[in-house]
Image (cartoon, rainbow, N blue to C red; front, top):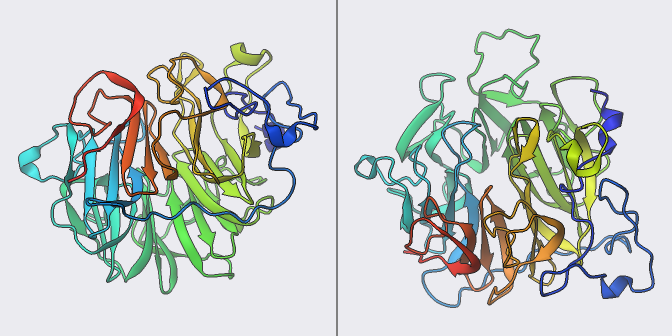
Length: 434
């Protein structure tokens, strides 16, 4: 595929106009005098955030009562084709609570719980003093990395391991960890180290045949500002303190022009500056930068939506939203009989409002309907501003600024965390945290 052709993309991938409080489409009052236009794929010619760089961050969490969550992540399924529906929250006492699907032990409840899904949030066994989370891996205050569920956990060489209780990885002290289905990375004092599968060139060039194939490897990331975070899917993303985003691996979703497929050489995405948040799920990616959202990936457009032939969207494309965005989330797309399923995105605005677009058959866009959300729809009935939002194909959860978590959409695996199984909810339900 020619990457130049990737500038075209799916209208479902990006919201095509701002939304009103009641979930219907409306023009943004800030743009009342402008003629913002969109092309046939739904991208903006002049979005509400085009006025300039907006140096905004997510609102902080201020615990109003106990229990209180300070960070929110999604879990991972047994493999890349398993669209697991589950969430974990880091609590302010340093423990982690998870709920939802548990087919790969991703709730971390031990062998007695087996693979039983749960609509009740409960603490991951044996974890304490946790400082950060990524899916089902955690870094504690001493820099130790703990993982549970399924992944490349540095056990039995490069093989994938499933464990229902957290295991401590044999790594140097880390400040951040990124977990993918077959590859993982950590930020350590010496730089970035990665391990697991090299199927997408995330450990070394595919032409190389090192003796330690699949084992822990140091990655030659270009010099620059200190590394703030890492995310791993079919590619690896490293975010620096100055907002520079460095990527390598599968192409797409590395988000930059390259003649290599995959591209194992870490390089900065020179079209993005001042990146504040990022999300990478398998081959789908989104970031916020300067108050704007950008998304891209390897999802094939369904021709029936807009006519013409299908094309891939490999380069960052702006999201239209009714206000500056400070955090964004995506899910992996899925193709069935040539038709794209499970297009899903949500983002948090600078006001703390949450907007979602894409698949909505279970009410996961939060507008009270089951209609596909082509526009960025404001989620209804959140009692407080949000600090973070996370998405799975069929459910959405938001961490509110008071430390509570609300979820909406499908509840087939108990992913709403409200103690009830099956069904769905169009109204955000409070997760009963332990």
